[in-house]
Image (cartoon, rainbow over all chains, first blue to last red; front, side, top):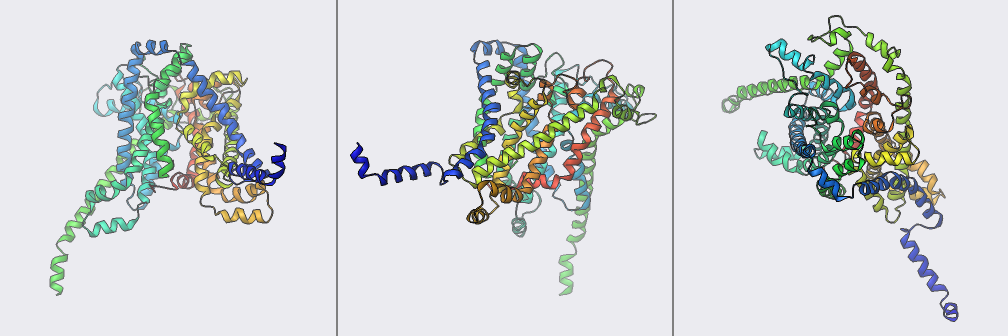
Length: 305
Length: 295
């Protein structure tokens, strides 16, 4: 053993070193130490505040009996329906109008620019103040909406938030659209602006104007962005707590909860954190495919949000 | 010749003109609807803030005697629930400041290591960040609450700073890596040949050249921390450690809510982020859409 190492003393060390260098990505000695040091704060944050909570959450919600209890709970069943409606209607209506309006904001003229500044206000203002305002607007007796209905048509408006599940859920969805549509419009507008003008000119020479131009030029080029935005928006909306919490508060009679608010309610109002975690974890069958698709899309298509 | 061109060119013209006028009218109609749709809740918040208590509980569309009294009450902490208003405001500012600083610090360091020093397996970190970005923050709230208690950070604003940094850093890494690609590597190499250490390259070359991305991400982190509600609500329950939105929302469902004071508080709370948003809007959208629709 010793004799062998005497003969081959130079080479193996070289091989060992270069292999190590390969591991270090071509960095040497102190540089490698620096590169590691630069990553430490993020790695620490990631483990302390992402990995640990995720594992802890999975452990809290690991008992199958929790899910049986959950699925037999009529409130949870309603919540599931609400969440699906919220995602399907809220996200798609919002994205559809955002797509149309992004085309509208492509118009030239000073007033369109000014209008865009006003239009992004719901996004620029923090959620809480406007949600409180909308909550009060929908008050049956003194709210602005019913006051306007009375003053103009002399009809008594309905109790938006405290009589019917569908009115309350509708109010939540409309508020959600009001708040989030400007952001996605701006993103789609940027997508449209990135389409080279020559393509439109070429299309015009070929006789494609108006709706034809939209279908054959804008739409194919925006399709990928639109898809990514829709998926991303779906996942963000799934985690949206504020809208439902501040507009309907889950009422009337707990009929308009979504998963995000029900989880918090179970954990903190009825003090059953495992049940709350289970409610949230029951969204995993939808979340995992979304996350995988989006990770792939965001890495390859360089759509930035 | 001239007659012919006149013949072929003139008939479509009135038609074209009429279509243009109609188009413009339709656009103005859309604009009007958009303005009403966008401004209704904002009109409502201003109206209620300017109302007296009696006008709030009436069917009026504009207060009989608009006054800024509610704002004065808020600014002078002249109502029992506004007792600690400025203290809570300072808490929001403190959280915002540290969130921005730590997000930029942590995010730029790790992006430098992955993007410029090209550390092996850096993609693992990028993926970890991307995945964190895609997990809804509210879904981690329950375990987070328990964990903060075990870290001894219950009712401490640093628990909020930790949360906001956790959820802002992935976005920072994402933007920094994309933006960093536009900075030529020759600059780093030249500095290294002149004998600069990695940390000198980071401070003297990387950070200054990344300034636009730093501004965009800093604004994002500030607005995130300022606007976030759920974690602040769960983790801060003491009146002195609370932030403005938590204090504000406490009265949403109480009987006899002082709506005019609440709306005035809400406006005072909303002004800084709105101003910052409009000041940095250009930079933000540049940051948001760099890369655009390449795919």
